[in-house]
Image (cartoon, rainbow, N blue to C red; front, side, top):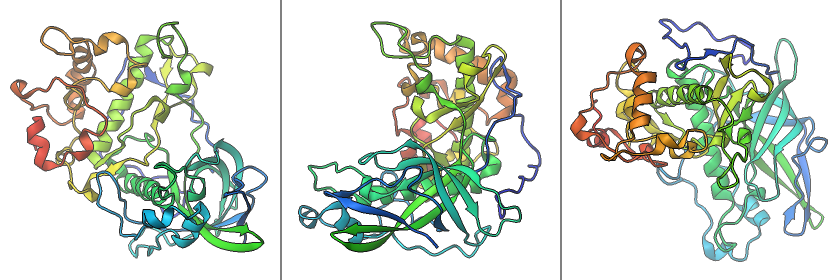
Length: 424
């Protein structure tokens, strides 16, 4: 949208989005307040002190920029010329960062708005650390030229390579993984915004753009200027499934079994519904980890027997946008309607959600079928709900029995669809 405060227009022929489980959606409105200087840091030892804290990052000018082409698993190689290992053996992080700045890009002439400038202030550290990788903070962003100047409370994910860890015996590049994360995640959010009509409403955080800012690093009394990239998204005021887990047994890992089974299955139905609609649009997030599934409002503060919350899938730094990938568009994108979750997940339940789903869903019968899981899929996504999705035309003789493993679907283009039993 040209104006971030502009209300989205009505989508014609809106499909049925009522909850798929037995509980109704929470009617309580989502509580989200919308969200020439440079940031400076002083070199202490081999790395600058971390500047991404409230009180240290204030009123910084940020400039909208377009992300470079995504690269890494599922995509092609980067067009950038990264440092070789022989050079990196003797190079510090700062030397790498100064020698290999972020890839410069051109703003698309057909973008839906012109480049913007804004002022950003960090208000809260969400997940930061000297060797964490991308830094996650809550911030206020004031975009220049808004008719009603008003800070927007958002989340910023800052891809600063100075705070990425070494991975391979201290000789790996830190600039390459930082740009790879940034290129993939910014591209994913741009694509989700572009294909909004195929997405489940509010399933991904709202995207507020890709930005860069100047950072001044002082080393041995000498100032060095560099650029750092970030993305900004909606601040989702909720809680992750992971943070809801508790130690319910002395002999097992933390899980969510202290929540009512019907409630947990209703959450899962909303999650899978959102995932297959992302497949239909052409994107696979690839990581249904409990830490990436957010619930709004927090069920610890609301009656879970009355309604189900908004389910939000976050973290797209390993996502693959199929039309931009090596495999090309996926057959899930071809039909008018999204694929049925009962079709997509007939091979078994998501392995990452074992602490949310009861063990019985992961138990096979004598024929190696996940009987309980399949019954739930048919009950939840079949019958009256089947009309929301593309017809399930997979032949029983071609039915696979192994559960999807992480990354299974992202490598599957149209050429492999029929091998999995999916008709185009």
